[in-house]
Image (cartoon, rainbow, N blue to C red; front, top):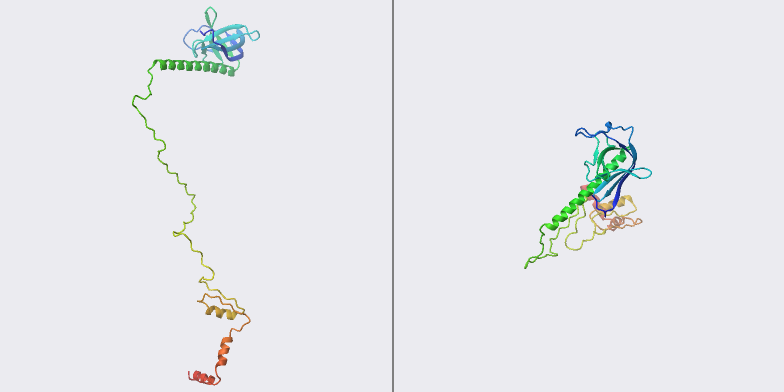
Length: 262
């Protein structure tokens, strides 16, 4: 039984339950709700599930006055104090006890399937907590009585710690994105500047006023890098005419004779 100093906690309250008088079980087979008079319950009221210490109490009370009709102490679940039926999830068999210790079995049914589920889960949670408490108390007793592990240093025993001498980890190289980067500069320091336009090997066409003279100058200056600036108003044939006028008139017939002999 629970100690007198322990408080009572409420686990579940269901306002509508029915109580049935069930026939005695003739064999070891499970109870069946179909054998009861489900249309005419013997009592109707509310159910209050409480816990005091490790023992749970199923109390059947009057809806209006709260007067206790019967109660069933439950020390383990599933067990003899609370049993399920084989043909429905809304009905249970309770073993009720009075103050003198006399016991009897009655049938209890819920109108809603959800109320029956809540009642079942509340009982399971309570006795799961009871099992955990028993395991904790057993482990505490074994820990006090068992041999203690000595983790202290023995006389003359030392320990060496190496701090800050770990291996350096290589930083992971970033994976390339697939784009070819620029080539590094050549060794030697400075990069030579690009060639100027004045020293290029390209032939620059001089700007002239006439089309024919421009073609002749282009042929004459094909291998030269010097820009030829010409004056459109000047006569490009002036040199040839000056040379012709310098020759004496007496030499012209001689040249004509030479061409005739050829």
